[in-house]
Amino acid sequence: MAARARFAFTVLAFGYAFLYLPIALVIVYSFNDSRLVTVWAGFSTKWWSALFANEAMLSAAWLSLRIAFVSATAAALIGLAAGYALARAPRFPGRTLFGSLVIAPMVMPEIVMGIAMLLLFVGSDSLLGGPQRGFLTIVIAHTTFAIAFVAVVVQARLADFDRSLEEAAMDLGATPWTAFLTVTLPMIAPAVASGWLLAFTLSLDDLVLTQFVAGAQSQTLPMQVYSSVRLGVDPQINALATLIVIVAVLALTTSGWLTRRRI
Amino acid sequence: MRLVIALPYAWLGIFFLLPFGLVLAIALGSAAPDSAPPVTLGLSLKNFALLLSDDLYVAAWLGSLRIAATSTLAALLLGYPMAYAIARADPRWRPILLMAVILPFWTSFLIRVYAWMGLLASNGLVNQFLRWSGLVGDPGTILGTEWAIHLGIVYAYLPFMVLPLYAALEKLDGGLLEAAADLGANPVVAFLTVTLPLSLPGIVAGCLLVFIPAVGEFVIPDLLGGTGTLMIGKVLWDEFFLNADWPLAAAVAVCLLLLLLGPIALFQRQQARSLERP
Image (cartoon, rainbow over all chains, first blue to last red; front, side):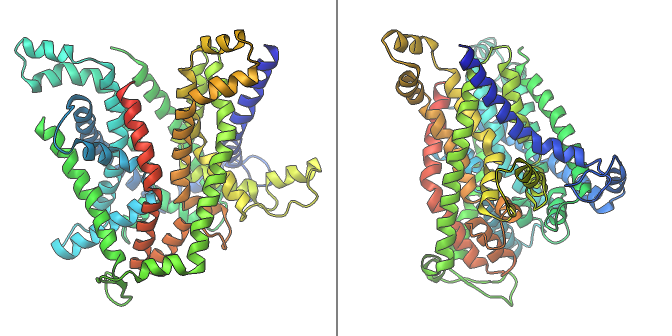
C-alpha cells in the first residue's frame, strides 16, 4: 500500500511539475532585469511598465476583449438553443446531421476551419458586397467555433434533470415559453454561464482562425503576441502571460463555483 | 421548438457547412496571382495530383501523421498514470487535482508554447540542466528539432488526454479489482485484464482529442520546430499566406479533412454514446 501511494505521489508530482514549471518560469522571468530569459539579472518591473506603455499591445487587447464578449454572448445564445434541442427534441428531420454539425467544430482542425471561413467571407464579399473583413467576420468565426462548447455543457446539464418539472409547469397552465423561462433556464443557468466563460476564453486565445478572417486592419491580442514571439523571446510577453494566468485562475474558479453550485 | 432548432441549424449550415463546399470548389480551381481574390474557378484535379505526387507534400503528410502519432503515445504514457493517480486519490482532493489539470487549458495556448521557446533555446534552462547533470555531453539546441515539437504537443494537449481517462477510470468499480485479486490475479494481471479494458473508451477519446488537432497543428511546429519542419498545417499556412496559392491550400485542407474524417467520426460516435447514458 505504501509503495502504491509513493508511486501515485511521484506520478502526480512529476506530472504537475511538467504542467506548471514552464508557466512558473515565464512568470518569474517577467521580473527579470535582463532581456534574456535564460539568465537571472536581478529584480525589475521595467517589462511591466513597457507592456503598459505598449500602445499596439493595449489596443489589440481591447479589440480582443470586445470580440470575445460579443462572440461569447452569441455563442451562449445559439449554443443554448442547440443544447436544448439536442437534449429535449429526441426526433426531428435531420437530427443526426444536426448533432454532427454541433459537435464537429470541436474537433475540426482550426486551420481547415480558418481557410473555409475566409473563402466564405471572400465569396460573400464578391457576391453580396460584404461583410468587410474585420471585427464582424472575427466575431462570426469565433461564435461558430464556440457554439459546440456551450451546447455540450448545456446538453449535459439538461440530461441531469428530468422533464417532469417542465411538464408540471405546463400542466399548471404555463406556456412552453414561460415554462422555459421560469423552470428550465434557472436550472441550466450555471451551465450557460460556464459555457459563456469558456467561449470567452477560447475567443480571447484564438490565433489560427483569426489570422485567416481578420483582414488587414484588425490586430487581435494573439496576432500581436504571435508576431512578437516569432522574432524570439521578449520579457514583455512574459509580463502579459503573467496577467493572462491571473485572469485564467479567476475565470476558472468562478466557473468551477458556478457549475458546482446546485439549486 | 422549431425556432430553437432552426437558429443553430441555420447558423452552422451557413457558417460551417457551406464554407466546406466552397473549399472544395476552390480546390478544383487554379491560382491567379494577379487578380483579387487570387483564384480562377475550374474543374481540375491537378492540385490534388500535385499533393499526392510531390515529394515535399508526401513527406509533410507522413511527417504530420508520424509526429502526431508518437506525441499522442507519449501523452498517453504520461497521462494515464496521472489520471489513474487522480482517480484513486482521496475524494476530497480529486476536484482540486482535476482543476489543476484543467487550469493550463484556460491560459493562453500561444503563451504555453512560448514558454518552451525560452526553455529549449541553446542556453536555455533545459540545456543548462542537461549540461550540469552530465547526462549529455553537448545537448546541442533542442529548439528547432522534432524533439521540441513532440514536447510542445504533449505539453499543450496533456489536459485533453487526462480528462477522458479520468472520467473512465473514476467510474471503475473497485470491487472488480478486489474480485480479481481474490481469484488469484496479481496487481499487474488485474490491471491488464480489468482496469485497462474498462478504461478503453477513455483511452480512445483521449488519444483522438490529442491526435486530431496534432495532425493539423500549426503554432507548435512554427514556433518550436525548425525551418525545415514538414508538417501539413504549416505547409497549408505557407501556401496560403506566403505563396498566396489559395487553390493548393484549399486542396491541402480537403485532404486533411478526408484524412481525419475517420478519427472525427469515431470521436463523434463515442461522444454521442457517452451523452446518451450519462
